[in-house]
Image (cartoon, rainbow, N blue to C red; front, top):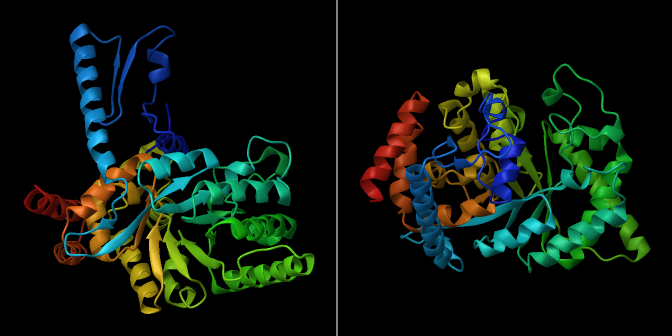
Length: 393
């Protein structure tokens, strides 16, 4: 009944490769146990108790989808490289080790976002360092040497933990969440970072911190990592001495100081779900204003471009792990803006890889420059659609 494309129900459904439609308002009042439903998630259409003709059409659509998926599977072992030789990485987002198979099966080149908060959910107490070490080690090994970016706990906002007794806040998305909790509750930070560091001996792991708004925060977190490295050395426990640290850019504050943050870390990953919400002051879960939530707004795109340029100026790279990264329509625009890595639900990887491989970087760069000069989201969308119609047919 509720939710939107970037709500966590939608994100998890895509991760599990399940068709889903949300934000229907009152669908649960219109269907009953035993009803047959046709769920056409590609066209946002639900048919209750379909006729024989409607059922036949649905089966044809399903068969066509499966045929396209089989064709896209041929791209599995090919790089995401444009016709004129510009290469980027296409990775996957995961919540548990079970998601790794879908990433590799669909041709992902690593994990661009490991949402560790799922380790903290559906339990009665915080996970121990040992439990986290085992979980991160399993992911590192499952990804067979490919890079895994582990985001530290992003609890708060719309993700509650009953056993932590989080405060009831007027504005939870602007409150005590994510890295703010980690910095205040050092035992949580210590267990998680030590678990990640120990697991880094078993694969190519990177650490990423969410909800950063200042250089002071990232320096404090880097200091903590160095302290835990000293502890692990003293205990004789192995870890990657050169493990990379990154920032998830999802606040306008982080974007505004990206030129400073780029001097402190090895990479950025843009979280477009929250960045769009905060930049436009639009609650992404509020259906009354969902029409205002548009990551292709010029305000959002200019912020994204600022972050990409700031990282490149310091010789660093920028990825994207928000849902926009898996949007085929946005792929060419983001590619032209200079994005280095796209991370998405596993099911989206083949289509995005196909779009990139069929494009010319010089052409998409020129298109992106034109799009960023436009005043409205509608004009930008028209610019992208015109390019797609002319260049990719």
